[in-house]
Length: 376
Image 1 (cartoon, rainbow, N blue to C red):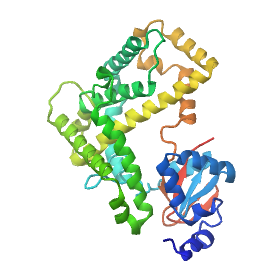
Image 2 (spheres, rainbow, N blue to C red; image 1 turned 90 degrees about the horizontal axis):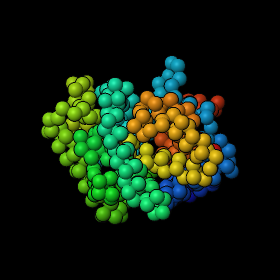
Image 3 (tube, helix red, strand yellow; image 1 turned 30 degrees about the vertical axis):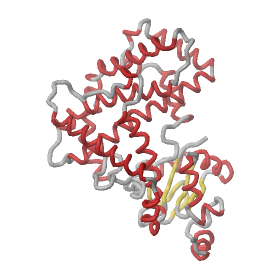
């Protein structure tokens, strides 16, 4: 039970009491957790911003900003200051596991990024172009085989996911998941989606420190098993790739080539491989799904984009990474797609340091959790 004293303090005496927002969002984390678990958090936060303005108190110790200047203050670099630290309650490592390049603190992220960057250099990506083209060609071939000249309906979201998971899986582990070949989700990919859901539920335990044991005890056993099974499959995938000797370069090739005592441990490689698979596949497929939807809803934009692509590339064989990078309207469409349909719409929380700091021209006290997403 929530005590009256806890609620009174949060609403009227807390350092954030002057910030606008709903009464119960200031009083307790429960409203936020409820909409998070319903999958409606981004819509809920948007509604709050439309009602209360650019900054809203969405939790007892949490502020959300819908402002470009705040975005720069929260996620950018300020001269003479360190970047705001990640919220450790959100960026957690798996049980008994290591941090990935995504969840690591600033020093760990810098160390890992220095190593992983080799795999994402322009030279490395150019070398992977034939592999990328092969999966894209297979994607187009499969669509043509199954659409019957536009008469058949199919779930384009699944097709995008099959393509991106196959591609990123091959780039990371040196072998695809065969989603396109089988026209179905690989079991590991299905489990990955379930593990993301499980991680969302488990992340709420940090908001209720005294109730963590109870929440974990009440969590469905299947979710815990799914999370652990997914972690085990990731470890096995990485081990298989590390044991394989190959002449064909992939992401792991560059990581291993430059790894030394300042590099990454095997558990860190496992965690980062998992992060790259998710970040490089599901998010890409989500963006492409949103862009496709909005293009089909805006005929004029679609026609203009088709015209640019077909005038630039008379044949499919002429489409290259360098050539695509020169299509200004295509890049503008993708940028607008990221704004209208962001794959990570809820924002990535940061924590105010011990001395407090200025966000959007207003001082924010220490240890406050911050979110920023341009929602309108």
